[in-house]
Length: 90
Image (cartoon, rainbow, N blue to C red; front, side):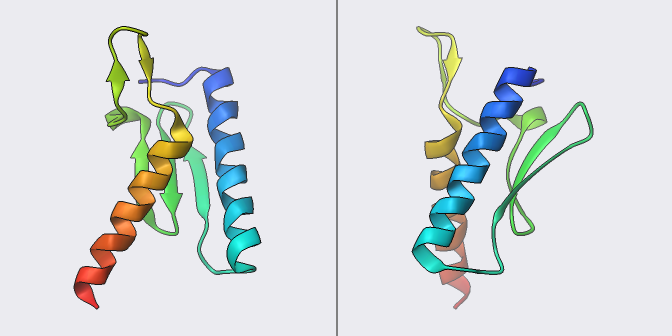
């Protein structure tokens, strides 16, 4: 899936909001959400962990509305799953 400019801006705004939420809750921390693109593939990281990439969009797609799940709840869910996997190693 290639994001259009409106979707890209929405994704970037979501990342800003998530990082602001982290700052408000924990203060300055070393880990944060980040966004990158090569112009074709868009990627969201938390630190170095890839949470989402446009070439393999695993968000829920609703056939009735013809829309993907919103980024914010999806990224929070992916982050929680990633953090839960770290507990396994501790």
